[in-house]
Length: 214
Image 1 (cartoon, one colour):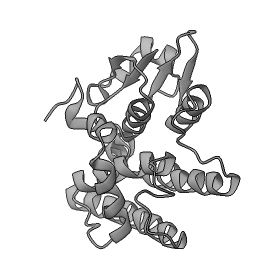
Image 2 (cartoon, rainbow, N blue to C red):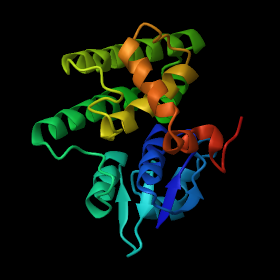
Image 3 (tube, one colour):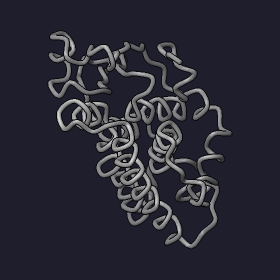
Image 4 (spheres, rainbow, N blue to C red):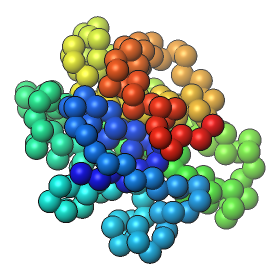
């Protein structure tokens, strides 16, 4: 399979973690977001939304949106699972993942930040305040959801990393990159550190990607 992504993309980061956890090999194709490669005609033909990631399966089918790709991976490569076999826990994992992928991440997206600066005239301080507000509030909600479980597990919903952890780690990385202080979020930071100690997560880190740029 061929995976189109970008080292700094949170959505692509999620997929890389899942590939590693499941031991899936793939060919990588860089889509340089800062250079506007996502708008090229050839890529737009693959993904009309002009975002990353895009996954081309071995059969030639094309999949977009990281959560859809993650669920497809879990259905076609079920071991180890990234979603619980228990329906209630599985729904909670999906809800946690959607808090990040649907509520937090879009507000830090490159195209949104460009719009703030280029179209609305936001300066660096205003953009930083925007990021601190929405990333901070979102990860505070994640902390609250983790507290509701009532269990001090190693990962979000148990002793094995799953969909929630796959989404949490790139979001914490983004908070660090944008200098958003989340040092008070005890469980979020504990789980992030537990994940970071695993090779699957470390190998998926942006700094370890072939298209990494300092």
